[in-house]
Length: 297
Image 1 (cartoon, rainbow, N blue to C red):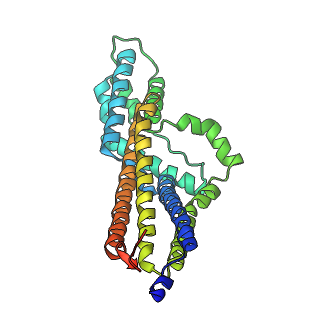
Image 2: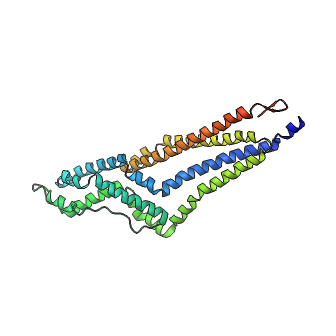
Image 3: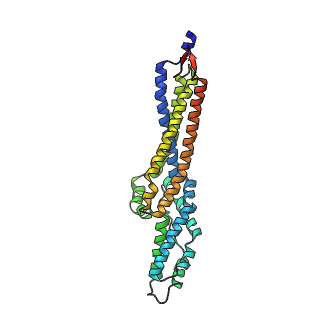
């Protein structure tokens, strides 16, 4: 019996193991959230997928065609002819260019090649479709208004970036350096998580089966924390808030958050499954009387 008692972890070791469990959960939360943040900032595939999302393109097309109808009524050109030029395929092309430029800006800090939308056939189409019974306006003025409207729709942040944003990027902030620093957070969180997990295993060396309780608690706690973050974000309604300023931008934000939310949700569910699996295994293997007729914690 004395040999069995000596095999049990000391109370101090168990107390430190609980501290390491909370540290492990915190490090896992930091790791997961930083991975998602790095994806949002630097994942070219993610931005391309959002930019070419069918719902996003449909929202942009609806907004643009509504404005084309309004401008056509005001200036007297054929809205249908202009809509044939500003079509779905054209918006897909422009959105791809903007997504590529945006990720290149964040990773390389290159601001010299901001994409602009231009259609060589637009001015001719507007001029040839002008109604003769309406006051003639300069087609170039109409084309400029249409071009600006399209650019504001597919790239709502253009004016902000062209004014204060570019000055900050070019003179006051090392964007690539900041991004490189942020990309190190997931690895740092992972290393700290492994260190905490290893220390738990070291402390529970006398009764290794008990470490399942700490690992399960940390994994399940992390899953609940990530799910709680997603619920809080959902309750805040960022898409609805952005829609008050720009409906097309709200569509992009919604698509981006939806894709990231699915990844975070699946990761949280996986952690919950692993966590509860460890706890169930602990209850079956180590939750019974371990030594001397005493119950495990």
